[in-house]
Length: 311
Picture 1 (tube, rainbow, N blue to C red):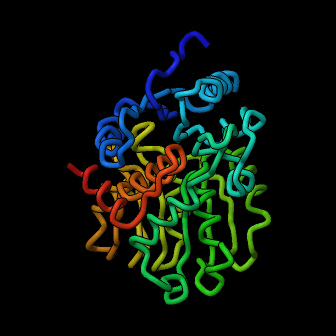
Picture 2: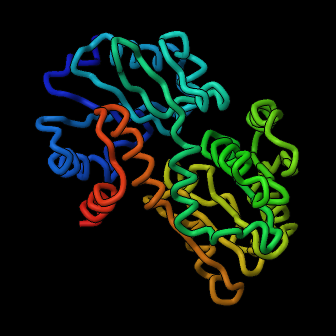
């Protein structure tokens, strides 16, 4: 573990792909000051998607054993890290066990703890732009492009018992490779049956265009592929036509955001509401920071941190 240097200040890590270009690297020091976290710092750890399991184990073992390494936010690698490192954790929360992913690493009472925060953070972000009783009032569907952790988390969020009378009629998860679809189907097989799930193999953007065309009005279309951030492009071609009166969510907030630009181009003609990933970014990070540093972040404090991040 020579490449990891022992932390000399309270440290949270960002385990991702291109962490150096993330806004959080400039935002976190301001947040730390606002939250009274004294000399806390953030450091990035970059891996290529689907890296060697030993690389993930090396990083998690270092965090576990280093006293001032307090935890991490994990993006892109959430499922792979869970599969390769779950035995290193003394505690995994119910969402982590259900989804087979870890997005938050923290420590408490001598335990290394893993949480899947996405069902919470994606839900908080969705609640900021999906109208109340939207599914009950309009009967729309959801298309999640990408079968990774974010899509699974949203599926779990939408099908919670508390939404029994207000769920999407159908959730379609489309992915370009079959193994991830099979894994998603397995993980979601115990979700309630009121919402129909379809798992569609769409190897190309043209395939996604066809799946998109099958949606009724008042649906929700989500880019959860990583395209536009972790890699260039969009899961759709420019010929893809969004369903009328629908919500479109680009869960990335940085990168070329081609998918969002495609939706914006149809915004007026198709009566679309187009949302980017900024609020998801805010909720995703504040949920993990709260867990790692054991500080409550909600209400006015959350709003303050959002405003700081925009500066």
